[in-house]
Length: 120
Image (cartoon, rainbow, N blue to C red; front, side, top):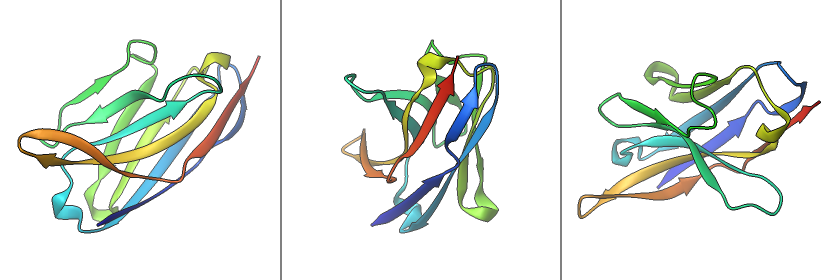
């Protein structure tokens, strides 16, 4: 099992920045990819940033150039740096970790979520 604890959300004005943190523990060697999802009221949960096991990253088009995902292995922590925030970035953000099952990455582990609110 893997445990994830995410934090760092808050209220910020449009154009501002926040950094989310996710501390992971447990059977960390079973982790394949790590990522950040978000879910706004009335919308489906979406993947906004992904850190692939080999080190490459990918982002949702809506956050490219504004958000950066990174990892500090010494601290067992993944970060999401969010700059130039927009009101449409308002959502609950969830840290997630995947494991490989028959070659497919399964998002099995989730943080409790942290609220990000961007005011206009």
